[in-house]
Structure formats: structure tokens, C-alpha cells
Image (tube, rainbow, N blue to C red; front, side, top):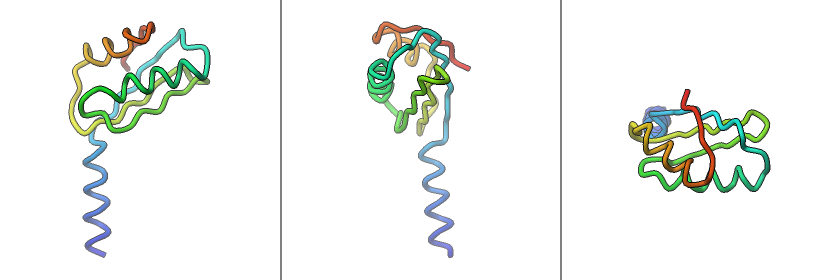
Length: 84
């Protein structure tokens, strides 16, 4: 039982930070893939889910991220976003 608790604690630390990015002008599935790929290149980011339906990206990171780094990665794809 202790091993399971330690494993779950370890996994929760991996995703210690979560950011929600609104991307109002995203409009196609290919765009979501491009945005996801760009955000995954940010140092410390280990998971990104981009929703075309909600026009959002959920970024999970193992460390605190600077807003300007997130915005620059998104801007490089041709989109602008609002960090919530």
C-alpha cells in the first residue's frame, strides 16, 4: 500500500503546475496539433491537451512557467492566447 501511495504522490508532483490558455481564433484539428506540438517544446511541459470545441489548451508542467514563454510559443504558431 505504501508503494501505491508513494507512486501516486510522485506522479502528482510531475504535473504540479497547470495552466489554461484560451485560444479564441483556433479553428481546425490541424491547428490544435500545431499548437500542442509548440507548447510541448517548452522546457518543463510534460502534457498538453488542446480542445477545438472549447478553444483552450491545458498545459501541465513540472515547474512554474513564465507567461511570456507560453505566449511566445503560441505566437510562433500564428495564434494569440489568453492565460487564465
